[in-house]
Amino acid sequence: MNTVIIGCQWGDEGKGKIVDLLALKNDVVVRFQGGNNAGHTVVVKDKTYKLHLIPSGILYPGKVCILGNGVVIAPDALLQEMESLVQAGHSMDSLYISERAHVIMPYHRAMDALEEKIKGDSKIGTTGRGIGPSYSDKVARCGIRMVDLLEADTLRKKLRSVFLSKEKIFQAWQEAWPFSLDDLVEKYTSYGKQLQSHIVDTSLLLEKLLKQKKTALFEGAQGTFLDIDYGSYPFVTSSNTLAGNACSGSGIGPTQIHKVLGVAKAYTTRVGEGVFPAELKNAIGDTLRSQGKEFGTTTGRPRRCGWLDLVMLKTAIRLNGINELCITKLDVLKGLSSIQICSGYSYKGSRLESIPASDEVYQKIEPIYETVNGWNEDISSCISFSDLPKNCQEYIKKIEKFLEIPVTLVSVGPERNQTIEHS
Ligand code: GDP
Ligand code: IMO
Ligand code: MG
Image (cartoon, rainbow, N blue to C red):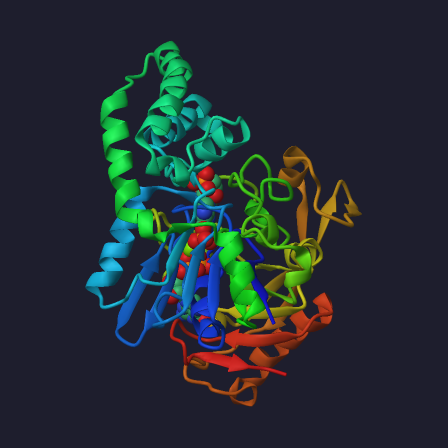
């Protein structure tokens, strides 16, 4: 059984923890989109790992970890991440990188910064990792791919034509263009040499593994509402984050996916700019941020916090074909006398049936809330659903009823064993 694990909100739902947990019972873990804008935290006993590119299965020896063709890769960041994992005692022998994955070049990071500067007040609040510009070049058919790093002449030819156009853009904005063709060719072919043994046709590799009845997890990065098509555009990331892209982002067909597990926080957070109907710009929001340690794994920015938004979750279930849900960080809601849940949106006095496509309209909708009772107990050491306080159980049951989907996993802390299976 092959499973896609997808974030149902604006990222940071705890996907890394859940992928790490489920990797134990699977053979292969595949990243299929995004790049090192992702920050997936995995806590194993007294060690905390912050993974940005490498799939969260890497912590178990022998699991095959794949960076699929849909990922954008900064080789410098990847090599650093590999090195720090090696230092921590983990082997990189079964890490494979698609030869078709696009490369994030230093000029993509510079372009990311420039685009944000030009946008001024309308900036996206990107992670600054060059994600958007790298995907833009992919679509504009002037990207550099991992396979190009293995051949100096090819790389030079491609970079020469990139330089011709990009240098002019920087000049027009009176920005420095500090890149030298020779330096880039030298540096990036050296990265190619260091990564050569890992760069393969990962679609072919996956096919072989699946034929041997190995099971795969597809690790989503970002979340449903950062999706380039269905997210809160333009305040989104530059890839399709939805479950459907697990196929084209890793070179398999839809018949190879058997299950989609959605991961959602028991409340909502967002990093960067954009709409957030259930946002709490008050003391409760501050409490969620401090109790939930809501600071970005990649950029360290404080995450904006708000109530659980069931309109978003219902939409995420539809867009991803989610069959089961995992609710994380339930422990963080402890100590609130009452909890609100957004169960609808109203616009100009009428209830909306779906999330508006127009960001201008979405900004103006009013959340409709239902109020439920909170709990004071620390639930972080609960090991079964029946251990949870009554109101806590009711909260989960309410989510299941509204969404018409089972919540099969409840996470009550960052560690592997702080996870409750629920049938
Ligand atoms: P991801 O990007 O979806 O993998 O999520 P992040 O790792 O960016 O953010 C989730 C954070 O919450 C990490 O610091 C996790 O260690 C932590 N975490 C995950 N699940 C739980 C949980 O159930 N309770 C608490 N308190 N923390 C959790
Ligand atoms: P994980 O995988 C939360 C956000 C950025 C910004 C927008 C675009 O850890 O859940 P980008 O650099 O991608 O062009 O930025 O997307 N963003 C994330 N927010 N978690 C992430 O990843 C994110 N990756 C990108 O903050 O608003
Ligand atoms: Mg994260």
